[in-house]
Length: 252
Image 1 (cartoon, one colour):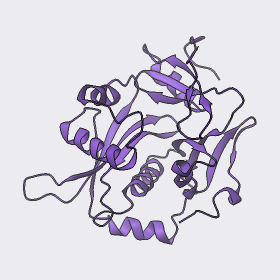
Image 2: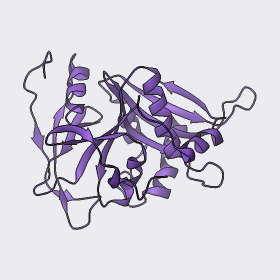
Image 3: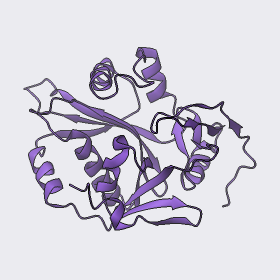
């Protein structure tokens, strides 16, 4: 790997309870993203399994455990299945726009509703407005917030039903964090729709990958990521296709 920066300093966090697998401890290695070459560093680290949070790039570094596996969708080879095509048709009326990374109260209120419904015991449940603003706005790289809205009512914008903080890297889109309305009767499958939309956006931009973060085998919270194939996983020998049997039982 060649880049106009040298030897970033890496640090390791103290062990904490793993949020995905009971009875295990997690530890992360991280470095700061700063200066004029933050984008290049983030791109390089993203290709070896790092994720971004504000101005920090991190990846798991857990003693005796390698369950967290970086995964990315091959956008040019992806073909939606029947259920995914039906989902896209159902939400075809949504108005989608990529906005500069600026936090709004509307986004924050949607995030609060999402966390309360989907992750009531998670570490983000206590986020206040300033925490959310930091998450969105403290980006040293090329980032956007992709918003998903119901049709406008006259001059008024439609209801915000989904959003995703997304980094544009040189080889793909990295979905940093997405959240959405959870009323299943009115708008089912919004989380899946956001991923499908990012795959389409990356393909239209000529980008080969959509980075989905970490997949954890045995964690029900992470199972949805295997629905988007072909899917590559990062292992000791680099990026390889995920075996079909990993997702055959849960694909929709």
